[in-house]
Length: 480
Image (cartoon, rainbow, N blue to C red; front, top):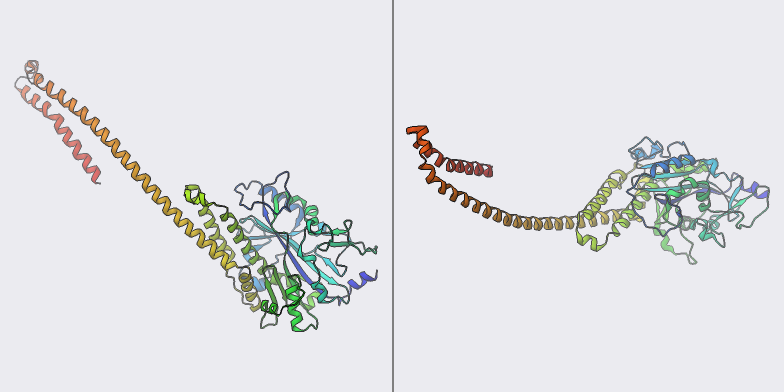
């Protein structure tokens, strides 16, 4: 068809839009819905299901090259690895099997864009944080004559679930048979990323819970044509945000340009980058170098934000009543959260640097706009303060308990000593009562003769000598 021929023209407008969909791990259940966003976010202490998750993950993934470009990211490449044996990597990358994503038809967006993501889709796992990410790097190729302004009118990237596509299908792709002239999107030919996840990636669906209904975007442009500078700024900004009726000049405040000519827009929703160094790559449909340059920094910072939000969500569930109880369980839980933050800060390198101007700026702006520093500082300071207060309260309670125990022990000692004193008095009475008959006993005189007096004297004073010796030994033991 003429349309298909136009879409395959080498001079068509191209760019890459990377959609990132964060998800949490969870133990599988019968009524589980991974797209139910009203779920309780928590860390699972039971990790027995993880082996089953990775077994099912292997069914939908294939081996791939590392997506971290050593040229740009050599200083952090060990943090993100496709090597499953690399225990030091905080992020593990799994390439989705392209065969599962091959629809055997054209995928059209708004009848103006040909979309292809089967060769550049990944699942990124942060096992320790129990967080993962679906990454769909969509190669976009436009019809001849389609401009940037038409890109800004595209709603496709705002949502990805079927719930948001129940009527107009403006957030869905159209499956267009190459031999068909169908131009209208409906239930029979619509395709959302919820469809892709729930159908093609079904083996891992029982173990995941999507975090947001909106995707986070990384838009990569190698060219802006002959558009004026103001139009380029609008392209960057509104490729991430809904275009307003009245264009505000303040959007320029969100645009950053480096000395190397790279322009970027950084927002909470994601980022958009124009780097003309990759124009020739885009003409040959080789997007990987562009992706490998900017995606690692993007996913690093996004992961930093997600784990800080996770910590915030977990700690916010601790009630004031539980804190006031100040029991060992609460202190243990807060201590574990505090240790997690320290490990995250160490392994994630929150203040990453790069020798490349555009990447150093990209890192810092992403961290700034996503409030990484604020989240990290607030979480650490808040937990440290509460932890110190709880430790002091716990110490005070333990001191009070020890004091009460000491008083109880003193009372017990008093009764024991009184009892022993009474017993001693009875023994002393018996001793003196038997002493006179013992001293007058003539039978001893008959046996011992003139030694009987010495024997009686030694027998009489021996208990006193033994008592004095025992007292001295006990005093020496106490002094030590």
